Image 1 (spheres, rainbow, N blue to C red):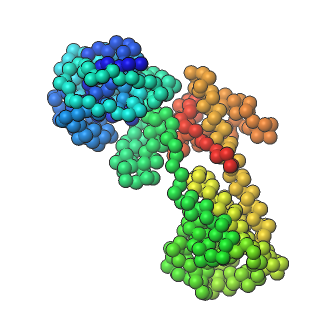
Image 2: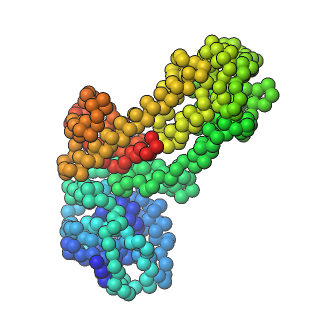
Image 3: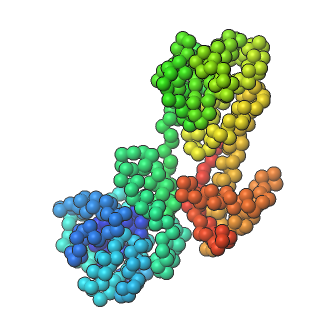
Length: 488
């Protein structure tokens, strides 16, 4: 499709359309249904109020940035839009509700209605251009001719048909926003997102949850995976100090902590226990003591178990040692006396490959490892070399839980694509059970309800939730995928 004309709008308004924060604009004239335009950013046209009073406080930093980027010589066009409907508003009573669903203040809308007899509210489907178009600044007017015809496609929509339809319905009915407090939080986090990667990730997740983004961009892998993937190889080498440091970093990654006030019983990832010091010691959320032994081709002698006992008693005392989880991280097989000593002292022998799998799971799914759930696994039999199997069983159990949640999200997504009516918990249960083998079917409705509520919480944001009366008849909608890597 070719576009010949641009529609001038205030630069902050276009930025909000591109970000998916709103789906409407206030053009100077009525826009016919189906007409398409390039979006041409301009300065604020109405001068009745100071700039600070044009936009809601949550959007004001973004508005100031977009206005500051305007160039006196050229204009950068990033998107085009098609009008889906254009309403004529002249009811002052509706302006407060309209403000809550857009970026404009009630004061701006009131000032606009004073200046003009009507407000033209155009609903736009917005599509990004593959490459921004730079063109000379044009004198202001209701429409601006493009220097050349612009060929556009619908391959890069800001919002999907489903999300746009939902947002349009809310705007037409002037329904209040579902999560105004999260919109405020998103605005605060957005200020940090340019310099803080974690803030940027949370900013993206909040936008998805709020319906401003259709799905998350390709998730950047956890940078810690670079060293995590070296755990097994290093544990099977002769680099004892390197393996000890990786083990310390691994426990920190899993969520263990140590004040590091005692260098002989530390978790400092840049140091080692050295002669006479423990290789590992965690203080919280529960005490853990451990020894690390690299090398696959050497058996682990009884002196390693004896050393763990001796050093723990020396630096921690008997009472603290008895309370502690005890681990030996070793690639080589334990000699029979060493294994019997490990069993008798409730020591868990864990292979480097298993530790790597555990930490990779944490890196790929940050909320997946609950250390308080891992604790009873490490406290119960079997001990010695057989303990490695129980830790792998724990890992598999966590993966099954992730897979279950991934399938619940997929079931909601499928139901939303099949029907415009949002699904209930019962419908989600039926859809899920239709897709899995008998041994994985969910029998209890309450289990499905708990899972859908968990997946729709602001901290996860895989599903959206519309609450029913008294917690009953809740309905859910899809926000983003919960992917499972093929290797899992």
